View 1: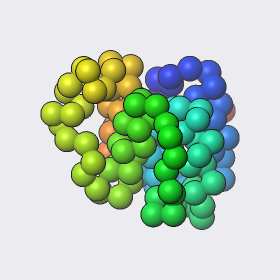
View 2: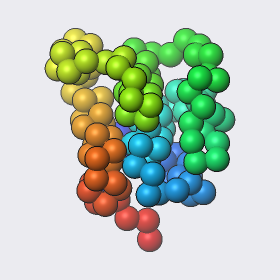
View 3: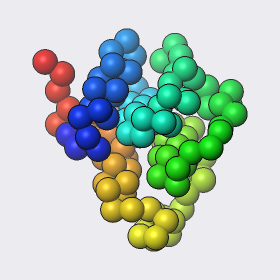
View 4: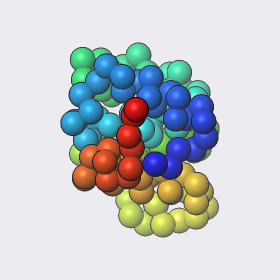
Length: 121
């Protein structure tokens, strides 16, 4: 499984330890939210009872990458349409590393954690 860095892997594993790993939408959103430390610090408390209370989050400042990750997480979890395919294809809006994370999240959303080789020992 591709993580942004070791901190991302650790944050993701800690976040999903008590969540329903069969909820693909939830896993994909948490994967993206934990990819940016500042974003996770702002949004982590809204992951409750195997769900994410996006409507309760009153966003504060975040980086462009953090905003992209947040919008993609919300789109994958809630079915909203904040980002388009054209947005994702624009390398000036979405850096290649962030695009790779989004692609991994889409695989999680569609096929579950096993689709990208995630195994927790």
